[in-house]
Image 1 (cartoon, one colour):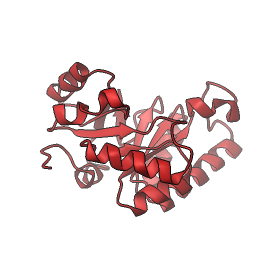
Image 2 (spheres, one colour):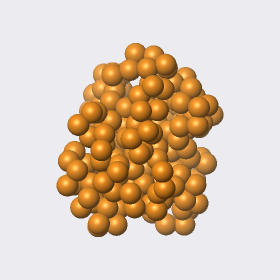
Image 3 (cartoon, helix red, strand yellow):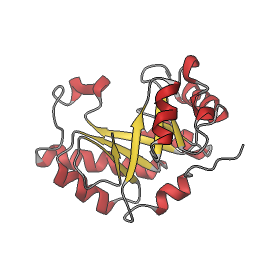
Length: 191
């Protein structure tokens, strides 16, 4: 399969050069409109009714997300990731542990991980609010980011992390950082 859109290598080369735009879609028409509008990255959950979206936008980096809770272990996550890559994804979002990310990365799957407010795990971080406002929380987020980086993730979504902390993390990691309400200092903006 041939892609004219940005590859993972292309995206990594943009770190520190220019901000990357990233949008999630729920319908094929939205994916096409986002691609025509010049979005660098487009993503959606990898579910059967969306499996054809990547092929509809071959000129854009397309990311499928493994739905949280749909995979009980690394083997199931790897199977889902391989199916998503076979459907045309250039990278996979995985909101699971560094252990699972490592299994995917070891098999050559480009993985985007997630730190900060992780909605399905919000009960662990005090609900739906910013994470990283205390030194203890900020230190924990940094350790989590480094665990994902060491596991082989190429990018990290940082959700509702204080902007100054997200900017500092961006400067200190080789991963691309994607801001979801974490300020403008990240490598990419989730729109």
